[in-house]
Length: 317
Figure (cartoon, rainbow, N blue to C red):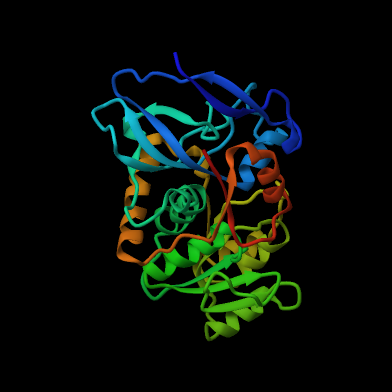
């Protein structure tokens, strides 16, 4: 039986807790496919996972996003695929491996115009942004969307998706830099978020807010909404926030939580199919990517943990 290399952790800790291991290549059963992984992205949630944030059972192979080629199973040999997976790296072994086994229904065809490393960088950020804005937020043309943490991976994905859906984006960040391409930027370190949003919307407020930061910005986002506006929460740092309930219900506002880790395998494949259309049409563009050799995973994890750079870190197998 042939073997493969995987990155695995058997204790929680910093990136150095990861160890390069050798395992048998799994064999697909009926209804399953074996993917030869070409590239696999490292998300901030992967770093948190290794640290014990999600309390994954160990030993565990981390990694949620991948791109590669089906090499066996379900009659789909040779198909180039991309995506993510339910519970990858937490409830089951993830994508930081040379081969990945999963049900065929979990797998989506990769856009032909994206390279493997570009395709591997799409999963979690774009799935989260789509689930927030489209599935939960029901974004509509000509609406104004407030996106906090707009310079981050989810924020940049959300901006692209909102523009694809013909909505306007007001981005909130800790500087006036605008790598997301938002229509307007608010610097939350020196400007009042709600007041600036009202000024940019003729006093009405945003129709929809995607709060990718949480914490101290949570209630400010609620204040920035128009009457009847809706807010999507995807961040939990810290886990407990407070807000004025009277203002909330007098404003007829809605608060909706989104958990991308709760998506099922078929759900993820269906969303990746929808995202593929955006890339094929040119409405969506992949992020800048920094690639690392598979053996450099610990260094790549440390780069993700530091953060700050508007690039996605991707391992090449």
